[in-house]
Length: 150
Figure (cartoon, rainbow, N blue to C red):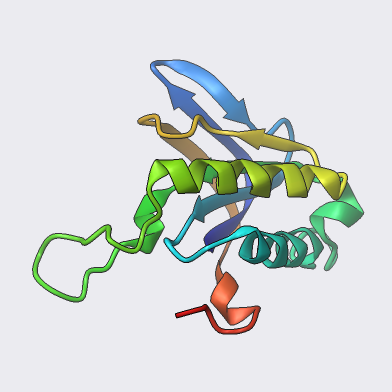
């Protein structure tokens, strides 16, 4: 799993001119990409890292500050652009695999006591963000856990 985490003073997701998710106050914007080899184990490692990262306020975590998060599924995070001029999506998990793992990720963040808002899985979304800092991290579950199988 790959996550782009941004410290946000505000963020929202709109589908068909309707806001489907937004941060009610400053928090974290998380763009989440699911890889074909991902499982719940990768989600667990990534969730634990993100909710405990001391990147808010005075080196505090989302848990410490009761800061909300907005999680948006983004399969394009697993694009392979090494060859040619068109991205390859072969490493991005198909919806039948990625949607349950996306939902599992959201559930696990909530189980840590963090307020979670979401986009709409699979929809064409307009994402608005005011990035504070700016502060952006890219975290890959492979960098946090044992090497991927196969």
